[in-house]
Length: 469
Image 1 (tube, rainbow, N blue to C red):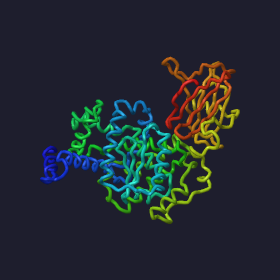
Image 2: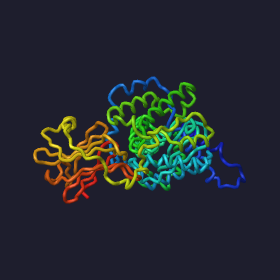
Image 3: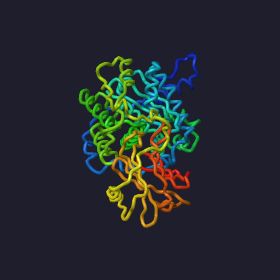
Image 4: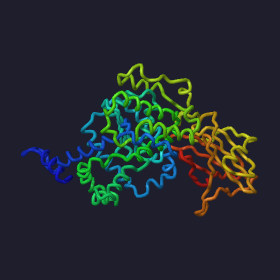
């Protein structure tokens, strides 16, 4: 039936006899246009409030399943970078035919600056991210993968802070970090919908299969609708990128509140476009729970908005809606605004009379603090993030207390993972925090008297050991 319907559509849209363009080329152009139209119906934002999903977040934290994945696990079996970029480029060509992009350099540069600020601290910071502003009053943002991200002027106009815009862009970056394009293709392959085409693409032959993929997208219009778990994962990943980029995480909550309000004012207006998303109230509950459990305090600090955001809204014709920056916003430490060398370790070294409380939460007994530092992973001069090197039964270990959650720092040695550092207690010289900087995540380090540094990178969900330097 799908094939018959597709054939009928193609026959109806065939070029007239004597048309100047190649029939085959013209047909394929229309196919890809229809394909990308289907893709455009899958962006972020306003979902219908289905009653069946309202109790979703009443149980255990739904983000726990994503916490168990690291960036390497997410990329396993993914589309090759070359093929992902090729598909994104073809998608962009078709999107450019259907929509008009904003050309105002102030608006374009602003959106790219905010987008790259969250992308640079994501799980895929090396993607060639490009952010486009679509001239359209619809509340929408979307990505075909490959670092191409599109946001509508309608969303920029409705937002009241820069943090809300950053939350939207971080969500779309999350789809890229989660390799959701590849996951969708693989699901289509395993369900038998695109066995030949998806198999060729996932096997590394996408260059010759992209045109066939366009046909398949028309025949199966729901293929590029993200699953609700993919939308939840994009929220999860985006929340941590928002935090690591120095924004106040409550702005993601405020975006969901805004979407819920817009839905109430115009019920059913955008159900078809956002049918795959969980409802705003569930997404709000999910992020509130994640902040309370793992990012405590992140909704009370960080940038909410800027004067640059207000200036962009004025250029879009919006006045008296944006919230003005506060003194805290103006002085908040941004990844690119840290005075001096942004990568230099910093923090206030402290002696810990209350270390027992942190050791207790880490379930470490009979430990003695050796060195400790307190600072801010976002680069501020004052913070409550803490790193401690300690002695336990003659062995040296280290832990980090981030937002009230304690992480044991482990090292890898000849394929084995251990919490014990190869140091004698009296060989520990210092510990430090290297905050987020442009193109690099926050790091912690333990330094020996021989100037060997053991370094860990903060991923937003835990620590990755980078080795001894």
